Image (cartoon, rainbow, N blue to C red; front, side, top):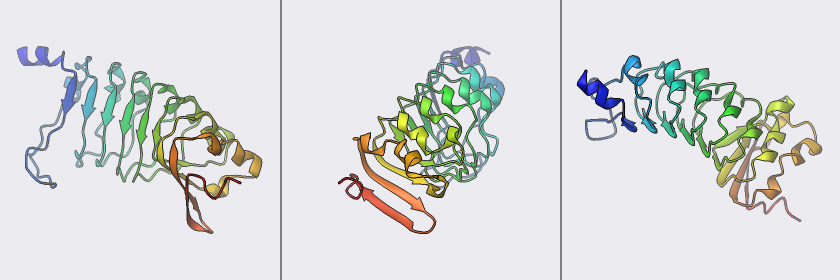
Amino acid sequence: MEACNRLKHVRTLLQLNLHKGHGTREGDRVAVPCDLLEQLKCLRVLSFKFFSDDENLLHRSIGELIHLRYLDLSYTSIVTLPESLCFLYNLQTLKLKLCRNLKKLPSNMQNLVKLHHLDIGGTDLEEMPKKMSKLKDLQFLSFYIAGKHEENGIGELGELPHLHGSFCIEKLENVKNSGEASNARMDEKIHLKKVRFVIPTLKKMYLTNYVLTKT
């Protein structure tokens, strides 16, 4: 009980792999029970990276960790993210790299208005949530899937001026016309160094610093 009381004030919780090397073995990790996680109200940093053997890694109580700034679920077998994740209004970094079983993000992702970093590289997402344009402070986004509807279409990128580094846009076949494409305002994203467009008929086309789009 005394140990649990001390844990209530923990700000960083990392699931550590105790055996050296890249592989994991049964028993290498100590799982954090859901009821204990619910008590860690002061958490700022939470990582389950490489905790790959649990498809239901996150409990809906994750939404109660309102002070959380950093959440890393990379390389896990997680299948779905609870909608309560969208109550983490202070979250700045969400890493989901190589979560290969993940096919969708929570529908209210637009509520995470302080999000700066969203790593979804290597996931199997089928579409983007609606109104991603509300994440105006977003600086890193692995890729964006152009949807068929205005609320998750390519135009949502128009309100994300701070994107940095490399970026990929998929399913360009859903873009209906040049006017819709121009709403993405890609030429104004001066911090992007490389943009990759994935088009079914053209396979992959790489543009560096918009060399092929500027006249």
